[in-house]
Length: 241
Length: 196
Image (cartoon, rainbow over all chains, first blue to last red; front, side):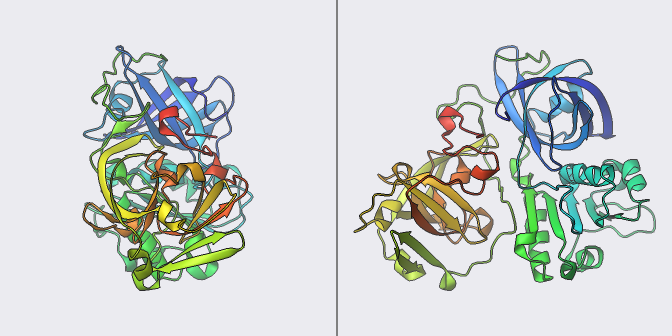
């Protein structure tokens, strides 16, 4: 039952960037996670105070799953998870939950993923599920990110992109590698890099509210059907997660 | 009380009045939506009310001529943030029921874009719910549900359907969009009715 809290063991930690890390969690019993779902994490302070936050699952593992957490400057939970949590610690976990922003291997059509910053996390879960299933549908990821140093999962994305069915495009908003332009994603760049609306792709967009609002609006302008676009926004979490 | 994380102190205020269990305070106004923000012009906006085989409709001007109330409400999102003391203006759902006699006990609210949410009539009548069209003294921004949204502040915010387009009376309770995807049928934040 998704509503019950379970104790999960922290069995692995991996730095993604200087402000984000991936936490591998092992659960007492296997819990199926759909690609794109999230979990709730509950922390309890020594005085009994509790805080709960939601994090997207980044990928399934044989005995649990991974999440990737970005430290938010004014955050309450994320600095603890990124800075203090250690392998061997336990966390209380509820879920995974959410049945909308998910990709299922039964879906046969092409998929366009569009992520802004740490919004790439649930999209990575979909990309991993796509690869794990050796799925024939074309998958594309458009990843808008501050700088090359801010990219999550770089090596794995490169290796996924060696497959014919997966393609990744980076848009660097502040600082790009030498010889590449830097600047915010705009409608023209989006139109050049996403699957055409005519191929009727399922579109998943995740990022800050402003990013999701802009991108989904442009996609409608470009002829994508509103009922093919699914969105998830974290921006509103207001730096408080 | 759960597993204690010795290095975790927490930074938020404890025991804030008005804050349901498992919620934390936020000052800004997060946006959570399942899809693109629908584009709805006020001159094309229509609100429909389907009851027992008949239906009534209001266009924007007709809606504005209904009784209006100012509402001060605390908002509680199932994703754990709460925003206290928000100001809205709109039409009490009671006003839509003027002259309606029904045995129905439930309503399914519909939104532009296809969203739905189910509510017992007991939770929307008697001054508990409104169709609001002003937030903080101005128009409701589209990403927050403008031009008009449902406001049911005593339940989790997914019940306060954005871009609301109508309501349908139901003999039986029928799950809406999130309620059929793992969320609670009712959604009382004080009882932490988060997941079904």
